[in-house]
Length: 129
Image (cartoon, rainbow, N blue to C red; front, side, top):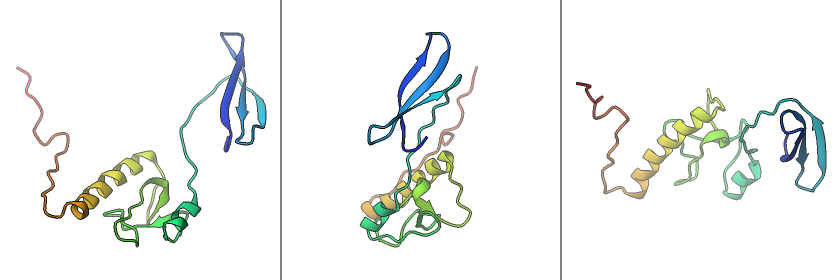
């Protein structure tokens, strides 16, 4: 439930009977429940992009999908904030976008220093005797 946050659980100590959620203004709601699934997420705020002078389009900030660079030099966008053709709003994609952005930003921040990139199997898999 957005914009509610979990405030309390009700039950007999063995079984869940209800969850209580609270809005930012203090309003609470009691919801009968026998199960609770928790997911972490944040709502994308287009106003934040506007404050940085970035235009929003297609539910996010347009980026170069290879570098995650926006139209403003030195500013990148990843995750749900980024928009490009074929974009999948999945946490897994956000992690990959973060890696691509870091590589591109490193080159901007330290243009005279080489990047040393290794992936998890760059050194090979240890042999078992």
